[in-house]
Amino acid sequence: SLTLEDCIVKALRQNLGVAIEVLNPDVAELRVSQAKEIFYPTLTFGYNTRENIQASFSFLESGGDVQTTRSGFNAEISQLLPIGGTFSIAFDGYSSETNQRFQSVNPRYGATLRFDLNQPLLRNFGPKITKREIIVARNNLDISETQLERSLQQTVYDVEQAYWSLKGLIENLKVRQLSLQLAEELLEKNKRSVEVGTLAPIEILSSQSAVASRKADIIEAEAQIKDEEDSLRILLNLSAEGVDDDARIIPIDTPDFEKREISFEDAFQTALQRRPDLNGTRINLKNREIDVKNAKNQLLPGLNLSASYWSPGQSGTEIIYDPSNPFDPPIGENEYPPSDAVSDAFNFVYDNWSVALTLDIPLDNILSKANYAQTKVNMEQSLLMLKDQEQQIFLEVKSVVRAVQTNYERVEAYRIAMQLAEKTLEAEEEKFKVGISTPYFVLQYQSELTTAQTNLLRAMYDYVLSLARLEQSLGTSLEKRNIKYSDFRGK
Image (cartoon, rainbow, N blue to C red; front, side):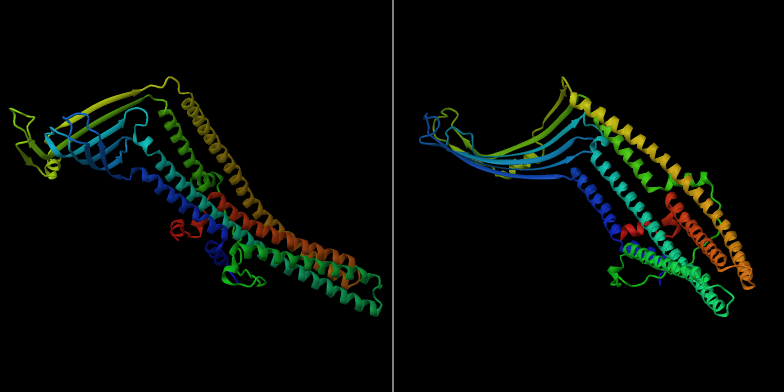
Protein backbone atom coordinates (compact mmCIF):
# COMPACT_ATOMS: atom_id res chain seq x y z
CA SER A 1 0.00 0.00 0.00
CA LEU A 2 1.53 3.29 -1.13
CA THR A 3 0.52 6.93 -1.04
CA LEU A 4 1.35 9.22 -3.92
CA GLU A 5 3.95 10.96 -1.77
CA ASP A 6 5.57 7.59 -0.99
CA CYS A 7 5.84 6.85 -4.69
CA ILE A 8 7.32 10.25 -5.56
CA VAL A 9 9.94 9.99 -2.81
CA LYS A 10 10.90 6.46 -3.88
CA ALA A 11 11.19 7.51 -7.52
CA LEU A 12 13.39 10.53 -6.78
CA ARG A 13 15.65 8.39 -4.60
CA GLN A 14 15.78 5.20 -6.64
CA ASN A 15 14.80 5.85 -10.26
CA LEU A 16 17.70 4.93 -12.53
CA GLY A 17 16.98 7.73 -14.97
CA VAL A 18 17.22 10.27 -12.15
CA ALA A 19 20.42 8.62 -10.92
CA ILE A 20 21.94 9.13 -14.36
CA GLU A 21 20.81 12.75 -14.67
CA VAL A 22 22.06 13.71 -11.22
CA LEU A 23 25.62 12.93 -12.30
CA ASN A 24 25.58 15.42 -15.18
CA PRO A 25 25.94 18.53 -12.96
CA ASP A 26 28.84 16.82 -11.17
CA VAL A 27 30.58 16.33 -14.52
CA ALA A 28 29.87 19.94 -15.49
CA GLU A 29 31.22 21.16 -12.15
CA LEU A 30 34.47 19.30 -12.79
CA ARG A 31 34.71 21.02 -16.17
CA VAL A 32 34.41 24.38 -14.43
CA SER A 33 37.33 23.45 -12.19
CA GLN A 34 39.26 22.33 -15.25
CA ALA A 35 38.60 25.64 -17.00
CA LYS A 36 39.84 27.57 -13.96
CA GLU A 37 43.23 25.91 -14.22
CA ILE A 38 44.38 28.56 -16.71
CA PHE A 39 44.67 30.98 -13.77
CA TYR A 40 46.69 28.63 -11.61
CA PRO A 41 50.31 29.83 -11.29
CA THR A 42 52.88 27.74 -13.13
CA LEU A 43 56.13 26.97 -11.34
CA THR A 44 59.10 25.87 -13.46
CA PHE A 45 62.48 24.58 -12.34
CA GLY A 46 65.50 23.82 -14.49
CA TYR A 47 69.07 22.71 -14.03
CA ASN A 48 71.85 22.21 -16.56
CA THR A 49 75.55 21.48 -16.55
CA ARG A 50 78.08 21.06 -19.31
CA GLU A 51 81.79 20.65 -19.85
CA ASN A 52 83.64 21.70 -23.01
CA ILE A 53 87.14 20.48 -23.83
CA GLN A 54 88.89 21.56 -27.00
CA ALA A 55 92.41 21.91 -28.30
CA SER A 56 94.23 25.13 -27.67
CA PHE A 57 95.43 26.95 -30.79
CA SER A 58 97.13 29.86 -29.04
CA PHE A 59 99.48 30.25 -26.13
CA LEU A 60 97.08 33.01 -25.01
CA GLU A 61 94.34 30.46 -24.39
CA SER A 62 96.03 27.68 -22.47
CA GLY A 63 99.13 25.63 -22.25
CA GLY A 64 97.17 22.47 -23.12
CA ASP A 65 93.54 21.71 -23.86
CA VAL A 66 91.00 24.44 -23.15
CA GLN A 67 88.55 23.15 -20.55
CA THR A 68 85.42 25.01 -19.46
CA THR A 69 82.81 23.80 -16.98
CA ARG A 70 79.48 25.59 -16.58
CA SER A 71 76.45 24.78 -14.40
CA GLY A 72 73.21 26.69 -14.19
CA PHE A 73 69.74 26.61 -12.69
CA ASN A 74 66.56 28.59 -13.12
CA ALA A 75 63.24 28.92 -11.32
CA GLU A 76 60.24 30.76 -12.72
CA ILE A 77 56.66 31.36 -11.62
CA SER A 78 54.21 32.70 -14.18
CA GLN A 79 50.60 33.79 -13.87
CA LEU A 80 47.91 34.53 -16.44
CA LEU A 81 46.28 37.89 -15.70
CA PRO A 82 42.50 38.43 -15.88
CA ILE A 83 42.95 40.96 -18.72
CA GLY A 84 44.83 38.45 -20.88
CA GLY A 85 48.46 39.22 -20.13
CA THR A 86 51.11 37.04 -18.55
CA PHE A 87 53.30 38.10 -15.65
CA SER A 88 56.33 36.09 -14.58
CA ILE A 89 59.10 36.27 -12.00
CA ALA A 90 62.28 34.35 -12.72
CA PHE A 91 65.50 33.76 -10.88
CA ASP A 92 68.47 32.06 -12.46
CA GLY A 93 72.09 31.53 -11.55
CA TYR A 94 75.21 29.96 -12.93
CA SER A 95 78.78 29.06 -12.11
CA SER A 96 81.58 28.94 -14.67
CA GLU A 97 85.19 27.84 -14.41
CA THR A 98 87.87 27.59 -17.11
CA ASN A 99 91.61 27.05 -17.48
CA GLN A 100 91.91 29.76 -20.09
CA ARG A 101 94.51 32.40 -19.38
CA PHE A 102 93.96 36.07 -18.68
CA GLN A 103 90.61 35.62 -16.92
CA SER A 104 89.73 38.51 -14.62
CA VAL A 105 87.23 36.41 -12.61
CA ASN A 106 87.58 32.65 -12.40
CA PRO A 107 85.56 30.79 -11.20
CA ARG A 108 82.63 33.10 -11.88
CA TYR A 109 79.17 33.12 -10.23
CA GLY A 110 76.17 34.95 -11.65
CA ALA A 111 72.54 35.49 -10.57
CA THR A 112 69.65 37.39 -12.17
CA LEU A 113 66.23 38.35 -10.82
CA ARG A 114 63.83 39.10 -13.67
CA PHE A 115 60.27 40.41 -14.04
CA ASP A 116 58.43 40.08 -17.36
CA LEU A 117 55.03 41.32 -18.50
CA ASN A 118 53.47 40.39 -21.84
CA GLN A 119 50.11 42.04 -22.42
CA PRO A 120 47.92 41.98 -25.56
CA LEU A 121 46.25 45.36 -26.09
CA LEU A 122 43.81 44.57 -28.90
CA ARG A 123 43.38 40.93 -29.88
CA ASN A 124 42.89 38.65 -26.82
CA PHE A 125 42.57 41.66 -24.50
CA GLY A 126 40.01 41.87 -21.70
CA PRO A 127 38.59 39.75 -18.87
CA LYS A 128 35.62 38.45 -20.90
CA ILE A 129 37.97 37.09 -23.56
CA THR A 130 40.40 35.63 -21.04
CA LYS A 131 37.69 34.07 -18.85
CA ARG A 132 35.61 32.87 -21.79
CA GLU A 133 36.09 29.15 -21.15
CA ILE A 134 35.31 29.57 -17.44
CA ILE A 135 32.15 31.57 -18.14
CA VAL A 136 30.97 29.03 -20.72
CA ALA A 137 31.72 26.14 -18.33
CA ARG A 138 29.72 27.84 -15.57
CA ASN A 139 26.85 28.43 -17.95
CA ASN A 140 26.99 24.78 -18.99
CA LEU A 141 26.83 23.84 -15.31
CA ASP A 142 23.70 25.96 -14.96
CA ILE A 143 22.25 24.30 -18.06
CA SER A 144 22.93 20.82 -16.66
CA GLU A 145 21.18 21.82 -13.44
CA THR A 146 18.12 23.03 -15.34
CA GLN A 147 18.11 19.72 -17.23
CA LEU A 148 18.25 17.82 -13.95
CA GLU A 149 15.44 19.92 -12.50
CA ARG A 150 13.33 19.27 -15.59
CA SER A 151 14.09 15.56 -15.30
CA LEU A 152 12.89 15.60 -11.69
CA GLN A 153 9.69 17.36 -12.73
CA GLN A 154 9.14 14.83 -15.51
CA THR A 155 9.71 11.97 -13.06
CA VAL A 156 7.17 13.44 -10.63
CA TYR A 157 4.62 13.72 -13.44
CA ASP A 158 5.34 10.19 -14.69
CA VAL A 159 4.78 8.85 -11.18
CA GLU A 160 1.52 10.78 -10.82
CA GLN A 161 0.34 9.56 -14.20
CA ALA A 162 1.15 5.93 -13.40
CA TYR A 163 -0.27 6.19 -9.86
CA TRP A 164 -3.62 7.70 -10.83
CA SER A 165 -3.88 5.50 -13.92
CA LEU A 166 -3.45 2.46 -11.68
CA LYS A 167 -5.99 3.85 -9.23
CA GLY A 168 -8.45 4.48 -12.07
CA LEU A 169 -7.97 0.98 -13.49
CA ILE A 170 -8.64 -0.55 -10.07
CA GLU A 171 -11.85 1.48 -9.75
CA ASN A 172 -12.78 0.46 -13.29
CA LEU A 173 -12.29 -3.19 -12.30
CA LYS A 174 -14.77 -2.67 -9.45
CA VAL A 175 -17.28 -1.27 -11.93
CA ARG A 176 -16.75 -4.29 -14.19
CA GLN A 177 -17.18 -6.66 -11.26
CA LEU A 178 -20.41 -4.93 -10.24
CA SER A 179 -21.63 -5.16 -13.83
CA LEU A 180 -20.89 -8.90 -13.82
CA GLN A 181 -22.73 -9.26 -10.50
CA LEU A 182 -25.83 -7.57 -11.94
CA ALA A 183 -25.71 -9.80 -15.03
CA GLU A 184 -25.34 -12.95 -12.90
CA GLU A 185 -28.25 -11.91 -10.66
CA LEU A 186 -30.42 -11.31 -13.71
CA LEU A 187 -29.40 -14.70 -15.11
CA GLU A 188 -30.48 -16.43 -11.88
CA LYS A 189 -33.81 -14.59 -11.94
CA ASN A 190 -34.35 -15.61 -15.55
CA LYS A 191 -33.60 -19.26 -14.73
CA ARG A 192 -36.21 -19.23 -11.98
CA SER A 193 -38.71 -17.57 -14.30
CA VAL A 194 -38.11 -20.26 -16.93
CA GLU A 195 -38.60 -22.97 -14.30
CA VAL A 196 -41.99 -21.57 -13.27
CA GLY A 197 -42.96 -21.00 -16.90
CA THR A 198 -43.18 -17.20 -16.89
CA LEU A 199 -40.25 -16.73 -19.27
CA ALA A 200 -39.31 -18.44 -22.51
CA PRO A 201 -36.08 -20.49 -22.34
CA ILE A 202 -34.57 -18.53 -25.24
CA GLU A 203 -34.46 -15.39 -23.09
CA ILE A 204 -31.73 -16.99 -20.97
CA LEU A 205 -29.28 -16.89 -23.89
CA SER A 206 -28.91 -13.10 -23.83
CA SER A 207 -28.23 -13.19 -20.08
CA GLN A 208 -25.66 -15.94 -20.47
CA SER A 209 -23.96 -14.00 -23.29
CA ALA A 210 -23.84 -10.88 -21.12
CA VAL A 211 -22.23 -12.80 -18.24
CA ALA A 212 -19.55 -14.25 -20.52
CA SER A 213 -18.86 -10.86 -22.11
CA ARG A 214 -18.51 -9.15 -18.73
CA LYS A 215 -16.16 -11.86 -17.49
CA ALA A 216 -13.98 -11.11 -20.52
CA ASP A 217 -14.09 -7.40 -19.59
CA ILE A 218 -12.83 -8.28 -16.10
CA ILE A 219 -9.97 -10.36 -17.51
CA GLU A 220 -8.95 -7.42 -19.71
CA ALA A 221 -9.21 -4.97 -16.79
CA GLU A 222 -7.03 -7.18 -14.58
CA ALA A 223 -4.37 -7.39 -17.32
CA GLN A 224 -4.38 -3.59 -17.65
CA ILE A 225 -3.86 -3.27 -13.90
CA LYS A 226 -0.86 -5.59 -14.01
CA ASP A 227 0.65 -3.64 -16.92
CA GLU A 228 0.27 -0.36 -15.03
CA GLU A 229 1.72 -1.93 -11.88
CA ASP A 230 4.79 -2.95 -13.88
CA SER A 231 5.18 0.60 -15.22
CA LEU A 232 4.96 2.09 -11.73
CA ARG A 233 7.30 -0.59 -10.35
CA ILE A 234 9.97 0.39 -12.91
CA LEU A 235 9.54 4.09 -12.14
CA LEU A 236 10.03 3.44 -8.42
CA ASN A 237 12.81 0.90 -9.03
CA LEU A 238 11.34 -1.29 -6.30
CA SER A 239 13.84 -4.02 -7.08
CA ALA A 240 16.42 -1.84 -5.30
CA GLU A 241 14.43 -2.48 -2.10
CA GLY A 242 14.25 -6.21 -2.74
CA VAL A 243 10.51 -6.08 -3.48
CA ASP A 244 9.27 -9.15 -5.34
CA ASP A 245 8.36 -8.53 -8.98
CA ASP A 246 4.93 -10.10 -8.46
CA ALA A 247 4.08 -7.99 -5.40
CA ARG A 248 0.84 -6.04 -5.76
CA ILE A 249 0.91 -2.24 -5.63
CA ILE A 250 -2.14 -0.74 -3.95
CA PRO A 251 -2.60 3.05 -4.29
CA ILE A 252 -4.42 4.22 -1.17
CA ASP A 253 -4.76 7.95 -1.91
CA THR A 254 -8.04 9.38 -3.14
CA PRO A 255 -7.87 12.11 -5.76
CA ASP A 256 -9.15 15.60 -5.05
CA PHE A 257 -11.86 16.72 -7.48
CA GLU A 258 -12.24 20.31 -6.33
CA LYS A 259 -12.65 22.85 -9.09
CA ARG A 260 -9.67 25.11 -9.76
CA GLU A 261 -9.99 28.51 -11.36
CA ILE A 262 -6.97 29.09 -13.59
CA SER A 263 -6.00 32.28 -15.39
CA PHE A 264 -4.20 31.52 -18.63
CA GLU A 265 -2.22 34.77 -18.55
CA ASP A 266 -0.96 34.09 -15.02
CA ALA A 267 -0.19 30.48 -15.92
CA PHE A 268 1.75 31.48 -19.05
CA GLN A 269 3.81 34.10 -17.20
CA THR A 270 4.60 31.54 -14.49
CA ALA A 271 5.78 29.07 -17.15
CA LEU A 272 8.03 31.72 -18.76
CA GLN A 273 9.68 32.35 -15.40
CA ARG A 274 9.82 28.85 -13.95
CA ARG A 275 10.31 26.37 -16.81
CA PRO A 276 13.83 24.92 -16.39
CA ASP A 277 14.13 23.97 -20.06
CA LEU A 278 13.35 27.55 -21.11
CA ASN A 279 15.89 28.90 -18.64
CA GLY A 280 18.43 26.47 -20.06
CA THR A 281 17.80 27.80 -23.56
CA ARG A 282 18.31 31.37 -22.31
CA ILE A 283 21.64 30.39 -20.74
CA ASN A 284 22.70 28.70 -23.97
CA LEU A 285 21.96 31.98 -25.77
CA LYS A 286 24.43 33.68 -23.44
CA ASN A 287 27.09 31.20 -24.55
CA ARG A 288 26.40 32.08 -28.17
CA GLU A 289 26.79 35.79 -27.34
CA ILE A 290 30.16 35.04 -25.76
CA ASP A 291 31.22 33.16 -28.91
CA VAL A 292 30.29 36.16 -31.08
CA LYS A 293 32.27 38.60 -28.93
CA ASN A 294 35.30 36.32 -28.91
CA ALA A 295 35.18 35.78 -32.68
CA LYS A 296 34.86 39.54 -33.24
CA ASN A 297 37.86 40.15 -31.00
CA GLN A 298 39.94 37.77 -33.11
CA LEU A 299 39.48 40.10 -36.10
CA LEU A 300 41.52 42.83 -34.38
CA PRO A 301 45.23 43.32 -35.06
CA GLY A 302 47.67 41.87 -32.59
CA LEU A 303 49.19 44.71 -30.56
CA ASN A 304 51.35 43.36 -27.74
CA LEU A 305 53.17 45.18 -24.97
CA SER A 306 56.29 43.56 -23.56
CA ALA A 307 58.01 45.01 -20.50
CA SER A 308 60.95 43.55 -18.61
CA TYR A 309 63.02 44.50 -15.62
CA TRP A 310 66.01 42.51 -14.45
CA SER A 311 68.65 42.85 -11.81
CA PRO A 312 71.92 40.92 -12.34
CA GLY A 313 74.57 40.09 -9.79
CA GLN A 314 78.07 38.66 -10.17
CA SER A 315 80.81 37.36 -7.92
CA GLY A 316 83.67 34.89 -7.97
CA THR A 317 87.41 34.82 -7.56
CA GLU A 318 88.96 38.04 -8.83
CA ILE A 319 92.43 37.44 -10.33
CA ILE A 320 94.90 40.31 -9.94
CA TYR A 321 97.60 40.90 -12.56
CA ASP A 322 100.56 43.26 -12.54
CA PRO A 323 99.34 46.28 -14.53
CA SER A 324 102.84 46.91 -15.83
CA ASN A 325 103.19 43.39 -17.21
CA PRO A 326 99.83 41.59 -17.53
CA PHE A 327 101.45 38.58 -19.21
CA ASP A 328 103.20 37.64 -16.00
CA PRO A 329 101.53 35.17 -13.65
CA PRO A 330 98.85 36.63 -11.34
CA ILE A 331 100.17 38.47 -8.34
CA GLY A 332 97.08 37.78 -6.17
CA GLU A 333 93.34 37.11 -5.98
CA ASN A 334 90.23 38.15 -4.06
CA GLU A 335 87.52 35.59 -3.38
CA TYR A 336 83.83 36.60 -3.32
CA PRO A 337 81.27 33.89 -2.46
CA PRO A 338 78.25 33.05 -4.69
CA SER A 339 75.97 34.68 -2.12
CA ASP A 340 77.35 38.07 -3.14
CA ALA A 341 75.91 37.60 -6.63
CA VAL A 342 72.52 36.67 -5.17
CA SER A 343 72.66 39.65 -2.81
CA ASP A 344 73.38 42.05 -5.67
CA ALA A 345 70.47 40.65 -7.68
CA PHE A 346 67.93 40.98 -4.85
CA ASN A 347 69.23 44.40 -3.78
CA PHE A 348 68.78 45.70 -7.32
CA VAL A 349 72.33 46.98 -7.54
CA TYR A 350 72.16 47.06 -11.34
CA ASP A 351 68.89 48.22 -12.89
CA ASN A 352 68.00 47.02 -16.37
CA TRP A 353 64.72 47.40 -18.20
CA SER A 354 63.14 47.18 -21.62
CA VAL A 355 59.77 48.05 -23.16
CA ALA A 356 58.56 46.96 -26.58
CA LEU A 357 55.39 47.18 -28.66
CA THR A 358 54.72 44.65 -31.39
CA LEU A 359 52.01 45.16 -34.00
CA ASP A 360 50.78 42.13 -35.95
CA ILE A 361 48.48 42.94 -38.87
CA PRO A 362 47.38 39.88 -40.87
CA LEU A 363 47.19 40.52 -44.60
CA ASP A 364 44.16 38.27 -44.78
CA ASN A 365 42.01 36.70 -42.08
CA ILE A 366 39.52 34.70 -44.08
CA LEU A 367 39.24 32.01 -41.41
CA SER A 368 38.61 34.51 -38.61
CA LYS A 369 35.94 36.28 -40.67
CA ALA A 370 34.28 32.97 -41.49
CA ASN A 371 34.31 31.98 -37.82
CA TYR A 372 32.80 35.35 -36.85
CA ALA A 373 30.04 34.94 -39.44
CA GLN A 374 29.34 31.40 -38.22
CA THR A 375 29.05 32.51 -34.59
CA LYS A 376 26.54 35.19 -35.59
CA VAL A 377 24.48 32.62 -37.47
CA ASN A 378 24.61 30.29 -34.44
CA MET A 379 23.45 33.11 -32.19
CA GLU A 380 20.58 33.98 -34.53
CA GLN A 381 19.62 30.31 -34.61
CA SER A 382 19.65 30.11 -30.80
CA LEU A 383 17.51 33.25 -30.59
CA LEU A 384 14.96 31.75 -32.99
CA MET A 385 14.99 28.51 -30.99
CA LEU A 386 14.19 30.51 -27.85
CA LYS A 387 11.27 32.27 -29.53
CA ASP A 388 10.03 28.96 -30.95
CA GLN A 389 10.23 27.35 -27.52
CA GLU A 390 8.25 30.22 -26.00
CA GLN A 391 5.57 29.72 -28.66
CA GLN A 392 5.47 25.98 -27.96
CA ILE A 393 5.10 26.66 -24.24
CA PHE A 394 2.31 29.13 -25.05
CA LEU A 395 0.44 26.41 -26.95
CA GLU A 396 1.20 23.78 -24.30
CA VAL A 397 -0.02 25.90 -21.38
CA LYS A 398 -3.10 27.00 -23.30
CA SER A 399 -3.93 23.39 -24.15
CA VAL A 400 -3.39 22.19 -20.58
CA VAL A 401 -5.48 25.01 -19.05
CA ARG A 402 -8.24 24.18 -21.51
CA ALA A 403 -7.92 20.47 -20.63
CA VAL A 404 -8.33 21.23 -16.92
CA GLN A 405 -11.50 23.21 -17.57
CA THR A 406 -12.85 20.70 -20.09
CA ASN A 407 -12.19 17.66 -17.90
CA TYR A 408 -13.93 19.26 -14.93
CA GLU A 409 -16.99 19.95 -17.09
CA ARG A 410 -16.82 16.36 -18.33
CA VAL A 411 -16.87 15.13 -14.72
CA GLU A 412 -20.01 17.14 -13.98
CA ALA A 413 -21.71 16.01 -17.19
CA TYR A 414 -20.83 12.32 -16.75
CA ARG A 415 -21.95 12.44 -13.11
CA ILE A 416 -25.40 13.53 -14.24
CA ALA A 417 -25.35 10.91 -17.00
CA MET A 418 -24.52 8.18 -14.46
CA GLN A 419 -27.31 9.28 -12.12
CA LEU A 420 -29.79 9.19 -14.99
CA ALA A 421 -28.51 5.77 -16.09
CA GLU A 422 -29.03 4.44 -12.54
CA LYS A 423 -32.62 5.73 -12.46
CA THR A 424 -33.30 4.36 -15.95
CA LEU A 425 -32.04 0.92 -14.93
CA GLU A 426 -34.11 0.95 -11.73
CA ALA A 427 -37.21 1.83 -13.74
CA GLU A 428 -36.53 -0.89 -16.30
CA GLU A 429 -35.99 -3.46 -13.52
CA GLU A 430 -39.37 -2.52 -12.01
CA LYS A 431 -40.99 -2.95 -15.43
CA PHE A 432 -39.29 -6.34 -15.77
CA LYS A 433 -40.64 -7.43 -12.39
CA VAL A 434 -44.23 -6.77 -13.47
CA GLY A 435 -43.67 -8.42 -16.83
CA ILE A 436 -43.77 -5.42 -19.17
CA SER A 437 -40.07 -5.60 -20.11
CA THR A 438 -37.62 -8.23 -21.25
CA PRO A 439 -34.13 -9.29 -20.10
CA TYR A 440 -32.73 -7.77 -23.29
CA PHE A 441 -33.69 -4.25 -22.26
CA VAL A 442 -32.52 -4.77 -18.68
CA LEU A 443 -29.12 -5.93 -19.95
CA GLN A 444 -28.98 -2.98 -22.34
CA TYR A 445 -29.55 -0.49 -19.53
CA GLN A 446 -27.05 -2.33 -17.34
CA SER A 447 -24.46 -1.85 -20.09
CA GLU A 448 -25.38 1.81 -20.38
CA LEU A 449 -24.90 2.23 -16.63
CA THR A 450 -21.52 0.51 -16.82
CA THR A 451 -20.51 2.80 -19.69
CA ALA A 452 -21.66 5.86 -17.75
CA GLN A 453 -19.72 4.77 -14.65
CA THR A 454 -16.61 4.09 -16.76
CA ASN A 455 -16.90 7.46 -18.49
CA LEU A 456 -17.22 9.22 -15.15
CA LEU A 457 -14.16 7.45 -13.77
CA ARG A 458 -12.16 8.27 -16.88
CA ALA A 459 -13.18 11.93 -16.73
CA MET A 460 -12.37 12.17 -13.01
CA TYR A 461 -8.88 10.76 -13.42
CA ASP A 462 -8.32 12.76 -16.60
CA TYR A 463 -9.06 15.85 -14.52
CA VAL A 464 -6.56 14.84 -11.84
CA LEU A 465 -3.90 14.09 -14.45
CA SER A 466 -4.56 17.37 -16.25
CA LEU A 467 -3.84 19.19 -12.97
CA ALA A 468 -0.58 17.27 -12.67
CA ARG A 469 0.21 18.09 -16.29
CA LEU A 470 -0.49 21.76 -15.54
CA GLU A 471 2.05 21.80 -12.71
CA GLN A 472 4.63 20.20 -14.99
CA SER A 473 3.91 22.67 -17.80
CA LEU A 474 4.34 25.60 -15.40
CA GLY A 475 7.55 24.17 -13.94
CA THR A 476 6.15 24.26 -10.38
CA SER A 477 5.63 20.56 -9.62
CA LEU A 478 8.63 20.40 -7.25
CA GLU A 479 7.66 23.55 -5.38
CA LYS A 480 4.08 22.33 -4.98
CA ARG A 481 5.33 19.24 -3.16
CA ASN A 482 7.94 21.14 -1.15
CA ILE A 483 10.78 19.33 -2.91
CA LYS A 484 13.84 21.57 -2.70
CA TYR A 485 16.07 21.14 -5.71
CA SER A 486 19.11 22.44 -3.81
CA ASP A 487 18.76 19.70 -1.19
CA PHE A 488 18.39 17.07 -3.87
CA ARG A 489 21.41 18.46 -5.75
CA GLY A 490 23.40 18.29 -2.52
CA LYS A 491 22.62 14.60 -2.26
